[in-house]
Image (cartoon, rainbow, N blue to C red; front, side, top):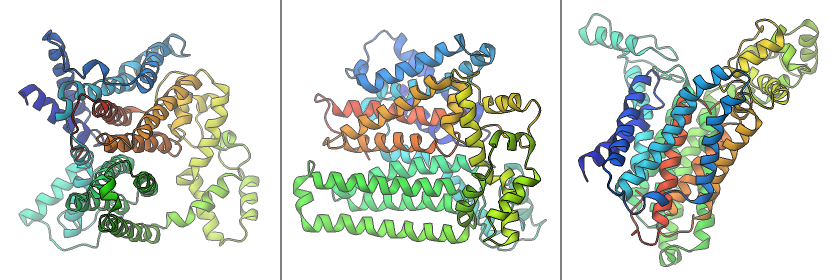
Length: 498
């Protein structure tokens, strides 16, 4: 491998690794600049790129990607606030398009020598490894006697230095359940952990199919470790979606196993089949135990149904956000929740300005979407601007977004923009599903299908189509889709995906 190819290889993995880490904006842009410079250098050499270059994306997902890019480039022309729209095109939407380019270019420049699924999973799990390492430091007492839900990195280093130098006492601490490390946004850890789980699950399933049980065992261990990280951090969304994606991957594997289009002899051997199912059962049992522990440890799981129930008791969600709860609304809630303890109901009502506000925000967001079909300005603060305009003053409950990715995207870019992104993710998922049975491209097809479905579904519970999360989606989906297309070509010999 040439030096520039090796540099692109490691820079791309480093880019995936730092994307979910807070306060790494400068490093992200530096890595983007390095990757773009390598692409530009390759184009300026005036030599033909590898034979697979200009057919790296098929017509369907490639056409949907071009339509999505065209819409983003043209949207400022009809946006209600074009100046802000142009700024966001140069910002979050522009960097997302660049991320699509560097993902696809990774296959153009590296071909089959690019990162495999295992390496992509390790890069994506970098923040998970950091989180678990910090957990061990906190548990050992090296971060001090009092550990908050999250601690700034500077405070961690200061406490560590004090204890190691002997100026502060050192003692073992209780296990720090709920500790998120240095990042106050547990979503950053949750998204990358679920992404890593998907990649490792693909390695596990196909290694088990090929009776490579050592590889499958390591992949299964990686899945459990990533899952444990989000359980420790009390990231309910990551725990829930991680379980969903594991079960979906297992279900797709079972369908594919019964198709018996790959490795028919291996699939028909009783011992091979028994080993695969035993491995799967052991891993699922381990995950089940960890999930049950999460449900028992985090009391918020037990309040979710009541939080949804009480949120739907609000008749006018926009007025509720603007003015706050009135006495009649609160009395009605207490009357309808009379089957619960008074203190518990009071806590639920108090949660309407916190964790319990998500349903109210989504309901208000849906009303705003109907009033603004063309979108506003493409910014991450569109929801906040529109709700302030609707209220005529600063709302009693201030939120920057609707906690629902599709609603926030529709408010920012309009109905057409939202549907364009939805169609792109659907196209990626369908392209992966179509090629699950291919002998060499199967692992890449499963990874593309699961990742596209994950990001598509995750948007229904959180606002994820923004800023660095757009880059996480674009870089990985672009690379895997292009790599899948490469592995499908008859003139390219098969290569191990892990």
